[in-house]
Image (cartoon, rainbow, N blue to C red; front, top):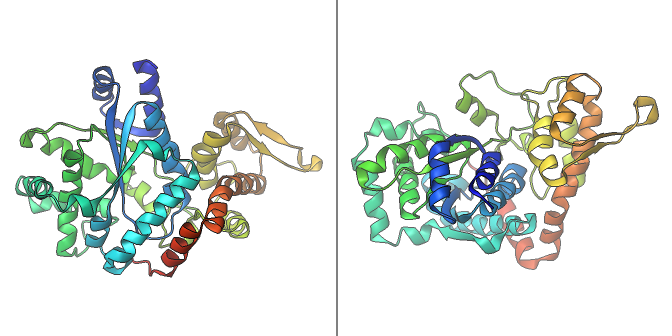
Length: 357
């Protein structure tokens, strides 16, 4: 696979790349590069974390990434997730890995690194301190969005540590590429700013799209802020489809979902078609009664978009089709958590944990 082919695969993942020129130079200089993502174990996994993350990581691996996935248990602790119970957070981390196994993530080529291992190393804390002493408190607070917080909130002292730790993670893990969601952009930019000052490097940022929730979008302005506000949230169950939801639960959630007729922009059902269904199934069949026009087979997302914009596809028919394909996607995960004793036990434990924002 040549550099252009590898670049095109990564561009499928990155809604924004900072910068494409630097990424191309990286691919020219390295056949294998280090990419990283991190996640807070904070509760039951939804399809954005499970399916979409699997799709993106597998693409990055195909493009030549040695992928490091940071299980950010100490970060979740600092952010008071699951009531700040570290043991529960770590159980949830194990559960998440089981989800990705069942999702089809190429686990053999993913290095899961736990933050609780990083924090045992003095060199890690030296890197955290280098980031901290070279930034103002105001600059760090501006990164609070990465924790799902706003700059106006009263933060705990532990939450001030969080952005310093996350920036340090990039350098400690020797990541050439930060492959996280758009909501993590601010801390990745911080790492690019601080890297040369600390005699490190400027990591390339490949920010993936934030899959929106099922409820009607808010009226907030600002691209990143709006995307963050609209994303799926486990703290708003009706906004999210979880990886172990039953077929009935999924059908009910999608049936109630926001899906304006003829509207493509900020329509969650069109998003799931684009980022999940066409990625996995390549084509999409919408079954309809003959009196309603008969079946439609969309060969790609662009074709589906044109059909929907013209009003040739009713929201109810789109919802029925999306429900079918999402259930088909999630079925192997549901099966895994039924027949695998370890996974089943982890799921029951995680379900019992109290979700905190």
